Image (cartoon, rainbow, N blue to C red; front, side, top):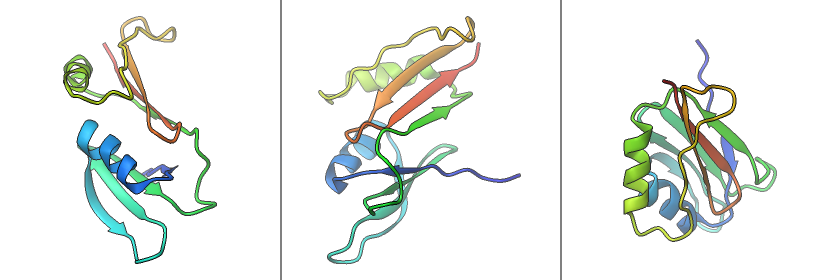
Length: 120
């Protein structure tokens, strides 16, 4: 089976770390950040892996990543709201396409959207 790792465009390394590591709870697996060069790194949370890139041309800001079958979404949502991150206060919703599911969308500082979905 193939593995998909979306590349998301970032413009500020420190803001990306604040959002993905400090707020969402991802960890850095590895990074390529030579002096004077844009950053490129891989972050992971459980079985979700993303690549974050400051490199021009790697991706466009405003991507959407659909993260299906996320377990314990209500608990994760509660954890996020309990943190002092003032730039994003996501809500939980029932999506139109599945009345038994829960959905939460978070928007990173670069307008990329992560859509977390837990199936009922």
